[in-house]
Amino acid sequence: MTTRRLQTGNERLDALLGGGLLPGTMTVVLGATGIGKTQLGLAFAKHGEKQEGETGILFDMTTRGDSQHHGEYAKRMFDWDLTRWPIEDNFDPAHLWDREAVRRDHLHVFARSGRRVTRGDVDTEGWQEWKADLNRKLQQTVAFFYGNFAQGVRRCVVDGVEPVDRQSESFQMHVFDYVYHQILRKESEWVARDVLREKYRVNEAEVAARAYEHTDVGCLLLLTSHEVLLDDLLARPIETGDVLSNANTIVLMGKVRDGLKMTRALHVAKHRGSPCDDAIVPFDIDEGGLVLQ
Image 1 (tube, rainbow, N blue to C red):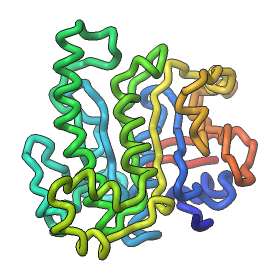
Image 2 (image 1 turned 180 degrees about the vertical axis):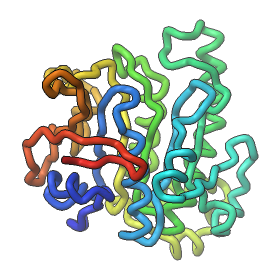
Image 3 (image 1 turned 30 degrees about the vertical axis):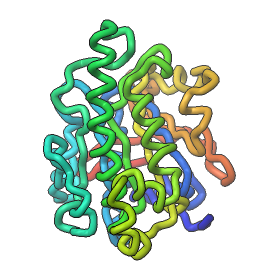
């Protein structure tokens, strides 16, 4: 596994992380809605253009029917016009080797799905319908990730995951678990087999020519919390099976009191296998994203 760091696009944060994130691992950024997670994620994705020659991709799992304003933020922060994967279209595996067809920045997999987050939000019939809908969308999801990785992308951001009392009940965490274990942490040949299925043999030479090391891919999961204050995030217990227990790196983002006002601050709570700074660092958000003090 390579020891090259994936820089976040924020020099101050990279310094806190001992040079950046470790490829082949998962980083969780945890904080309340509006704290700045999406801006941090976009900076990380955009920095791929400088470091690997390809911008990262964004996998939006929000179920509210809208997106996380990725396009608006990307345009304002970086003059970056996000290209969108057409989830409603039937994907032809023959297009996998066509850069114009597969090199897309953004997939909103649950667009128009309604506000359903946990198993308790639907009845038995609704649960069966959701699983059928998910199976259709997973094929598109695998094609989106594999097609981009085959074109040289080496970082991804997963956004739109809403807070729940138990992650095991979350539809969104169910999908993320599939993406992480069946795509991101799987050898490229086997991901290609999942996409191509019966067409794998006739495309075997193309698969070999575009093989990539999955241990070079970095994943940033932006996870929304109920907790708003940084102190509450620091005291948050981690359950068995919680995605935080499996993360290599955890960055907490929350509000802190500064005299008679509240301000934002972040803390690197975990950075396994690497030295990191223990500081709690205040930050602001301007037109260019996060500015750490």
